[in-house]
Image (tube, rainbow, N blue to C red; front, side, top):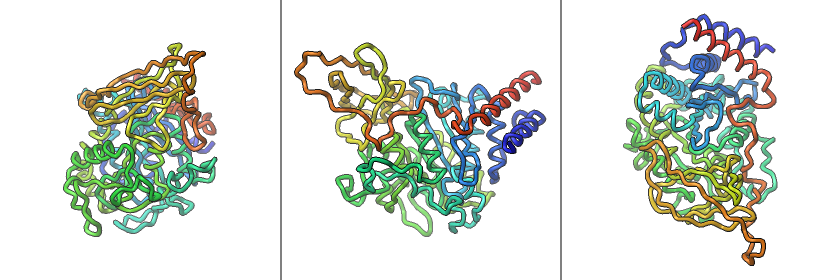
Length: 465
């Protein structure tokens, strides 16, 4: 009840405060971030939606702000994108960059800035400014010390996700209930939406790192790197960020670290990492994610924040635009209904967990321009193979759209039955019925009241204006 009373008081304060004010370049504590997100949500109900994906070990909410033309729910054909920061509590720059990004996009949208309008019209952006608020509360402002890195239980959250290279694909359970609260929250989040592209923001180096982070010495290990099936796309994505950044592309690195050609690196080639979030996103959630190391200092002095925002602004915006790479569409069965869990494979890209359609029958496949052979498999239907000439989509803020129409297998057919496509226990395909914009079930009453309150604030403001 105390948390609910706090939010009701906060809503009252919002009524008495200006609808918008300039976001300061300084470090905001967890309560201030919460207040800012609530204010943006209340002031922009048409393009913003605030929700929580769960709580930290100490019970702090893990707030996500969704931005887009339809911020509360998924829209067919509109890809879902996310940014996550402050996974390590003492790596604080990402928190402030994401707050500045929210401010920049909202102001740009209100000012009819073409780029902001097209970004928020073509995709839905989910922003989690702090994944580890407990760690931040204990963080040292030292450039390299690790105080505050771990969560309240002393666990490194970027070593706590299920790992595809640790033998888990052979197990029946991923033991998700044994993971840390913050990791469980993110895993649950990934089951509610088909996220297409993502990045998690870190500090302590200056490089864009891409999967895989780990290896078991199998065929994925090539020349010291652990190469993913979509390696060409990952390299492209990393270069987009690096070359759009003010200095990352130079590859100078930091004084105490090595240099990186063009400011990018394969994660495993840099250093092996088990239980990382970017590999989990890619393998189990079919979401391509990068790890962006954005400053040599883990907790840069506040005076450097304006310059660091200037260095990263274009890169953050350009990376969002890459969600429109490749091809998207739906798969329909023989009766014309969209189907879930149809396997949509691209020749030459053998993913550990094959990409499948979501509950809307949708698929999204990030690909560079070129000709690709697609194979679509669904029980009771003929295997469909089509070749598509995929153009470059980001410049148009839309990937190529192509639907696959399946034919039922004739009852008297002697054709061998299609490959069984029932999801394996370790591949998360069946999304929960409530989308990411909804509240977590255990906290629904509180957040329902909060949503009503925020709507009340918006209504009163419109009357006052």
